[in-house]
Each structure stands twice: as C-alpha cells, then as structure tokens.
Length: 516
Image (cartoon, rainbow, N blue to C red):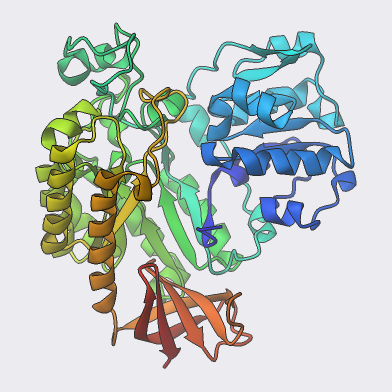
C-alpha cells in the first residue's frame, strides 16, 4: 500500500508461463481479493506472491480463497524462501522456492493445469518445492539457478498488465537481468557458519568465490538475491525492447529496467563461461549498456516524450566516469539509487558490502555531474550497529547531499531467509532505539530540506487517481520518478501527462502543485 505506483516483474513472468501452457491467468492485488473483487469460484488455482513482510496478507488471501473453493494454493516470491514458516502460517499447499518459472511449468505438466494438486509421487520429483506430507512439511532439493539461455527464452506476459488498475501511471518493471555479482560474505554471524577470513570470496578465482568453505550465504548479509538467483544473467536487448514496446503500446507510460544492479547488465558475457562472482572486475560492459539504452530511447513514444524509461539500482564500485556518462546521455534527469546501508567502512566490510562509503560518494558525484539524480539507501538496526557506525552514517548522509544526492531512503533491518543474517532479530522501531532514531532524524531532516528545493519547479507527471483523503485533489507521479504530487483540477485526466508547478511541501514523501 505504500508503493501503489509499483508493478513488479514477477507476477507477469508467472502469467507468461501459464499463458504458454494454454491457461488463462488473472493478476489481482491482495486488496482487491480481500475486498471481494475476485470470485474464487471462477478460478481453479490460486498463486500468491509475497515479500517476507507480507505473510499476514498472504494468509488472509488464502483464507478468503479457502472459504469458497478447495482449489490448490501455491505460494511464491521471497516469502516462500522460508517454506516451513510460510506453509504453516498460511496453510497453503505448495511453496515454490527461488526462480519459479520452470517449477511452475513442471507442476502444470504433472496435473496442476486441471485444477488439481499433483499427487505426492509427482511432487516428490519436482525440484524447488516444499509441501505438506501429512502434517509435516517436506522440502525437495532446490532447483539449480537458471542459465542465461533458458532465462532469455522466457516470455513474460504483457497482456496481464491491464489487470493492474493503475498500469497507465505506475512504474512498470521490465526485468533486464537476474542475480547479483557480489559474492563477498558477511563477517558477522550468530555462531556457527561464521566467516573464518580465508579471503576466497574477495580474492579468489571466479569459481572459488562461488562456494564458501564455512557455508556463509553469498552477498550482503541482509540480502538473499545471490542465494535465490545466483550470479547475474542478462536478457538479450531484443527481448527487452520487444516487451517494453508492447507494454508502451498498451498505454504504459513509465518503464523501469529491473535489476539488482543495472551496471551488471552484460558483464557476465565478458567472463563467460565462468560465473560472474566478482562485483568489481571486469568493469561494466559499456557496449551492452549503451546498446540497450539506445534501442529503448529510440522507441517512438519514448523519443516523443510521451513515455519514460528509468533504471533503479546501481552499485557504487561500478559507477566509473564512463558509465555515468552513458547513463547521463540516455537518462538525464532520472533518479538512480546507490546503496550505502552504513557510513562506516569497517561496518560496510563486516556486512559484506562490495563498495565502500567513499566509493559511493564518488559515484554520486559522477552521476550528478552526468545529469542524473542520485538517491541513496541506508539501513538502520543492522547487525553490528553501534554509536561509531551511527555517527559515520550520519556523516555519510550529509556528505551525500553535498555530493549531489536528491533523496535519502531509509529502511529498517529485517532478517531474510537464505541470507547470512537470517536468524538475527529484526531491528526495533526507531522510537525504541535511540541509535536508529539518530539515523532516522537525520534522513528526515535532509529529505525535508531537499523537498523545499522543489518548490517553484515544474514537473511532468502522470495523473493516477483521486486522493482518498481529499477527493478535490488527484495523486500524480513524476514521469522520471520522484515524490508523490497532489494536483488540483485534474478530474477525468487519469493516465494523462500534465505539467505541474510545485507550490508546497505536504510531507517528506509528498508535495503539492497546480497544473500549468
């Protein structure tokens, strides 16, 4: 509910598998299901995708389904990476762990397409599943991560985009690569499986970095992406442009190129057939990045300014002046995210980060000079947080703003299944932790100051929907992302582009404006 303008790539990927099998999928938001907007009896199978924080919503959706039908229920997405908890808390039938496309295709072949859960013998032969066997949860071996050729052969549904109420104004994510190149390991652990400092994950060969002799999951300690999806694999530019073009032809206005780190795009081709497990070397595949952005910017509606293409996450260690220059050539004025998480160099290494705070500051300067708008991420309550790391984080926030950051995004630490920090307690709310509150207050102060700088500026926005707290106002989203804008006099303009002059700041997440 906090990100109503986001349409992720995962559900459309699953819908594509179902369509290829001759089935007719419909995507519905959890709220639509819970409010009675879906008739469960009109469907044979329920597939629920959720983040780890969505467990309660997943349980309520399944309960609504169970009240009307006994059709099988599959759970997917990050919430399924702790299958025992997911299945027991929600009473779903099957949890699909990790990359789900091939697993779902195999389930369909073994009987799911008829609206029946495959029998136990059939389920036992499918990798990447967990399911109830009597009252116990049985977990099959994980499915190996998909190779690049198989990944590129998938066909996400574009038809299903119309199932989303706000598809004409939302940020619609198009997956360009999957996986992460950071195979460093966190050096903080609860007890067993702790890093022994062998150095292989930071200085070994690409093959050596893949496995940890102590079994520490790869990547930043708070993240499960490399455990779930492996090293990066990129889609071909032709497939990406085809999907984006179809979406734009259906009325989508804002495309986001989805990737854990956009500058990993095409890097695996430079080391093929070895796995890309080094977050620093080689440098970005400049040719592949420029080819993709050039093709997308040449699409008619993008070239005419009637639609926008954005990227999201960048890793500071890969933001060279040349990379920033290419991004600025095609994405000028676009926000891009750089993760700090902590401002302490020592803490950064302990949690498994690949880039240092000083490298991230350098990346912000490169991006700002190239005409982009860097946003910076921090996390409060991380394992290892102490007064020294907090003061370093506050300093990094201030230095980020001076270097050209346009916004500070702050998250509270949550332990994720299949990450190195799974098992750590989640961070308490900032009101219960004075160290975290110090970080929170600094971020809020900086963001309020940055919002004030917008007053008097004119933004191109897409009108989305009436504002639920004041129907005289309409919610709008900037074409190139940014704060939510409340607009006056925008009746019957949903999905249309408008120029809006910012007249005031409503909150640290919202501004107000008038149409010009």
